[in-house]
Amino acid sequence: MGYRVAVVGATGNVGREMMAILAEREFPCDEVAAVASSRSQGSEVEFGDTGKMLKCKNIEHFDWAGWDIALFAAGSGPAKEYAPKAAAAGCVVIDNSSLYRMDPDVPLIVPEVNPDAIDGYSKKNIIANPNCSTAQLVVALKPIHDAAGIKRCVVSTYQSVSGAGKSGMDELFEQSRAIFVGDPVEPTTFTKQIAFNVIPHIDVFMDDGSTKEEWKMVVETKKILDPKVKLNATCVRVPVFVGHSESVNLELEKELSAEDAAEILREAPGIMLVDKREDGGYVTPVECAGDGATYISRLRDDPTIDNGLSFWCVSDNLRKGAALNAVQIAELLGRRHLKKG
Image (cartoon, rainbow, N blue to C red):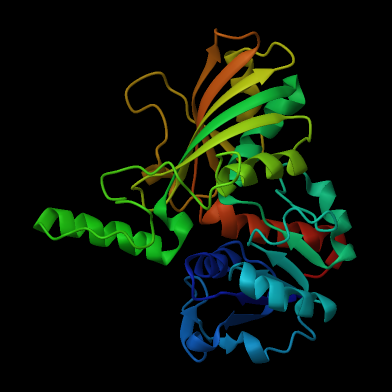
């Protein structure tokens, strides 16, 4: 006996990826519903590569009774309005928006990092999926933190345009085309030209000069990994379609050489260590697209501080940063609590 699963925001980048991953991982579904806004009602989306087409149902009239799990990938607005309704009907919501992440009664889960936290899901029947840049970072940090304790983390991100949705991907494509043919470039989704450029600005600015994306990385890492970890982030949008990259520098409580860290990371769940000290001996966003792993390269000692490490971290933001993590949460929920399939 399998689950009845609703995918909310099924026509968007992350929603489609959720469908693909449910099919790819053979998640035990008796029924899958594609749920979207009224604009998409009646349109069809494919359930992975199965050839099975699902007609989108209007979220405004969707009856949540009898559904086991809802994967929300529709943004904070729909999550605010409809997630509590689904939860009240007995459907466990796994929400990809930022709305519930810092709610103390909502677990914020990365299954490789803090699986036990899922036991608190029943307070609201809602589980939060972390920010895409946070998800890959904490997967990389967890085994190092367990081995040597992380005092301080400084991370610079290089985030792909797919993190801004379909409009971000379209803007990079259209601007690149315009530059090649000599047409004018007009930013709409981003604040400045993104083609052949980088923009040190993701989300709104905060009073202290950081952006909300940077703030999310700080508070989410503390909630998921350890509140004692000090973290400073600089988040940058780059002209890459899919795949977020991060340059990470750590100050540890105990000595841990790069060589020993490599041995630990090789055995860690969700991580692929690709670190050859030669031309091309590292992973870039193009190579990680379509994969679920968090790739680590350029691992090395930092001689400027005691117990310092640096590394490069790359992951597909639509998968581990969003859709895959949500499905992994659903799998964890099933193993520990729902007991079907």
